[in-house]
Length: 153
Length: 304
Image (tube, rainbow over all chains, first blue to last red; front, side, top):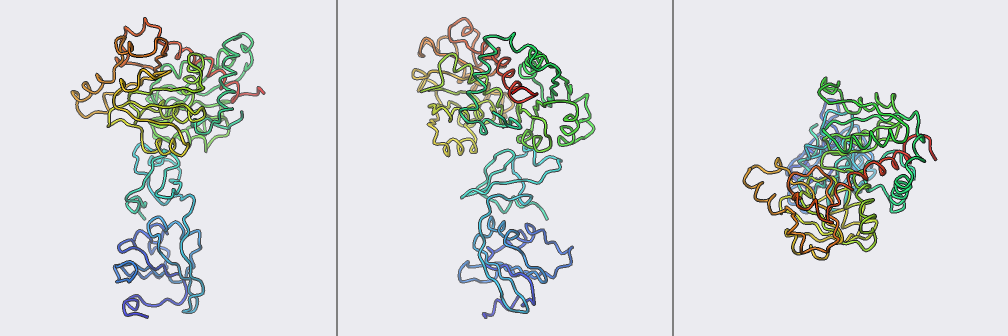
């Protein structure tokens, strides 16, 4: 284990999300709807040196095993992230993200004339394209700045 | 054809479109045969934006089928003013009527409305999104005047915000039409529509000058460039002037080129075109009744 990984302590059981692009850890938590109010122990490493990414973020969530469906949505902002499921300090499952077909309630549509930005009882819905996302209500395509579209936690 | 809702022309196949147009032709040929076909059917008109043609032709269509309409009236006089959500409004109205016609300023409003109701919901314009019933009457008019096969069409004006343009472009991909889009740079087709047309393998070319393409057109479809799309009055006047059609412009076109417009026009088609054989826009507006009768006949009520 290299020195920099020790800056974020090991967890006993839970989920480690590694290889997040530097600076995106808080967006990762926002997407996962983890804001600390649920009582989870959450550790964050930001801008940690990484051979592969230059700088990377790491998020560790104690006591919660995130499912593939829950984490796949992270591929929109962290396509190279890896997910480690930890039990009693051992990594029992390690996998990459798969790009989902659709995401709901995660991104905000940038089109101010879209019905999903009004005060209606609906979640935003986006189709995931090979190179972006598309609002399923107003059909606006977003290719750039997807992290800026993550709805506030 | 049986769709729960009519939200966008993207949901329609060529066969669906032809079913509507064929039914409209039957109605046109013998309106009396359809006069009592939907007695007792009640259509709810929810127009959150002003409308003359679309609303009145839906009302006429329902009444000519023997049914009736209930109209929400203007937004100012309704509970929307009190802050009611669209999702609530459509769920309430659904309990009163057999079908809903919705016009709303927000894109995606018809799709969302359709998620909340079981009665058929027909999109009569959702912001800069879609206007499928207009497209069906446009296609009916094109079929009557030029035919839908091997069509070369020019669409000119505000292609960015013009919902009739977006719906028509999608529908024409079913007929392998050659589509020429003529507009100022700032009002070109939106990225989403271009993406869809590309995915469909549509034949699309974009121009800034009508003269480049006018002589080869079978149909010219003109839309209004709206003042509010421009920050500056002078810029608007200059650009709107460049995309105006008059009898002289049309001297370079085929003699029988139908000129269409979803109306209302301001001055993008000069009044001197009205007296030429090109003028097809009033016939087009009139076709709104048989085509909407056909749609109501197919989608609303208990007919086969």
